[in-house]
Image (cartoon, rainbow, N blue to C red; front, side, top):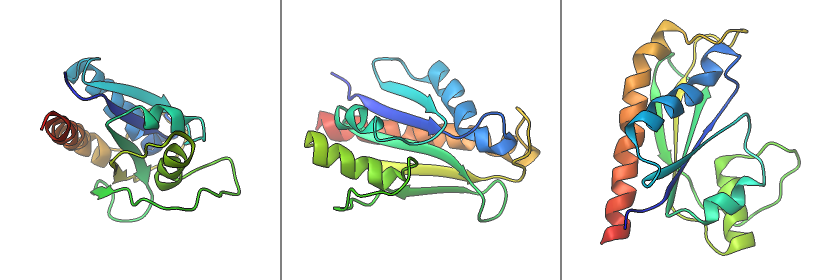
Length: 154
């Protein structure tokens, strides 16, 4: 049986490049079967995601970022942290993972994938640089999904 991967795309699709994750999610829905992955689109990370994360065999968080060269893609493993405290209603991927582990006993391996945006103005369109980066992001998520599946099958 294939691994259940959770893909969490977050950002604001009405703020230009901040919506890159939603565009990636839409393309992934065409590429991955529902047996391979659950794909969620949210505006921000909330504590409620911890339950879904805890049920996954691996989680991939997709977002935009403001630092770096526009169009540049970043990928990093989400570091496990023991501290589950937070002071606002917005969480980081590491905090969601810590909550999944603390509340449900499972904080699976997770990765963050992000692209530096160029324009965060009111728009549903991506900048040209992120339009160019979009296929690379989809391929990077697909590659991570395949890695997670291989690990759970072995």
